[in-house]
Image (cartoon, rainbow, N blue to C red; front, side, top):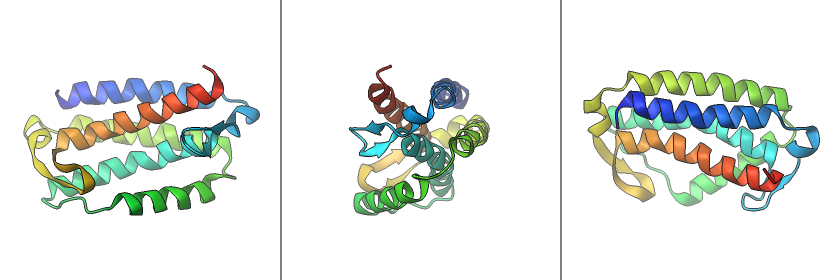
Length: 154
């Protein structure tokens, strides 16, 4: 998959994320995502916070450094984020989703085919390519959006 194709897929997923987030009522925003053990609003904020993280991980790979993180550390960071994001206004989260997705898309489009093929160790997932890591931004948002839609009955 080319960087342009990857960015197009990411843009489509994030357009759906942003549309659903923007259309949420306050009651929707506080609805619990059973699979997530967090509210809809916190999960949207988690997606927004994840966008720059995927870019940083790709940059690590491009710099020849592995991503070193345990699942336990990731779980702890997610729990800390949930505490911070619980009272965050919906408008701020939606604005971060829009701005972060635009920057992430631009970054993805800047990658070359050669860069997409570079490999490095990615924490618990073993040896992976830059393309796999960049594609994580798509998988991440898509998976969480599925949980959100299920929680909202959409």
